[in-house]
Amino acid sequence: MVQRIVVIGGGGGASTLLRLLKTYENLHLTGLPVMFDSGGSTGKVSQEHGLRPVSDVLNQILALVPDGYSELQRAARALLGYRFDEGIVRGRRVDNYMVVALTRAFGSEELAIKALCNLFQIVGEVHPVSFSPSNLVARYAVPNHQAEDYEVIGESDIDSAKKKFQLRYPISYLGLDSEPLANLSAVDAILNADKVILGPGSLYTSLLPNLLIGQIRDALVKTKAKLLVPINLMTQAGQTSHQGKDGDWKYWYVHQHVYEILKYLNGGRKIDGIFVHDHEEFPFSPDVLMRYRASGSGPVFLDSAFDMGIPLSRGNYADPSEQLSGKSDRTQRSFVRNSRALTDALLSV
Image (cartoon, rainbow, N blue to C red; front, side, top):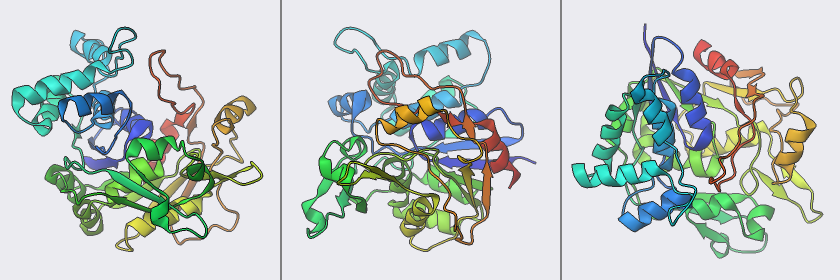
């Protein structure tokens, strides 16, 4: 029997999960990436050509390219994700320009993305959750100030957390500057799924933005699919770790991640399972931890008194192989990704 699996999120976490899942039999995979990205090379190309940013879409298409050594498969892997390393387009991805060309040829980004999926014969489907031109808005809980006084607009500026108050204080509100319409293909995928996996990924810029779209949130409430949440391996500065006045970093626990997801689900449904890497039993090496902590990130530990009435799976869900950036890739990437043990656990529920 074929399981219909939907993965919601963006960044490296969701694409890594899809790349692992495509190696299993009897699965129908659908990736639902966000299109609220406002920075990096994708943001620049999108702004120049009046399109929505597609970096997460392209990462998921690449993840679902069939494994193999045919000329088509090798060409797909060479093109998707390739960044120019010189000239005026240095650091930009060639696949962004492919989307621009296909949009001009077919008349819309939606049709361009479908054409790209068909061209590379991906294992599954990729449907952005929305094509609406909305921007993320975050407000921060700065004591003795109105939240509106400390507001950041745009996924890139929220994610990069370059302002001091972003590193010091938590986000108290996440919203959109306009009401987006959901992509009905994404809604249908959720309603017809057997399992919906939310994450892993940046909490406030990859996961929760999906729950801000009313039709997506409603579909998650209505679907009979199990809702499964793999907790991030590490915290992220400005989102789930913050620096105190003494300079020490405070890292979020598992329950804080789960609480935020439930909050943005508006109490509409339960979570059917959470999956947590056991950092006590399977700790990262001191070198890896040092590199993460240099950017304000630390392990996401399970609270000793964790009890939220949600089924919990703990294990060695980290891949020890290091994830390195290309020389022309200016975006900081995770050093460690999730492992096949995580997908085994997700599929066993």
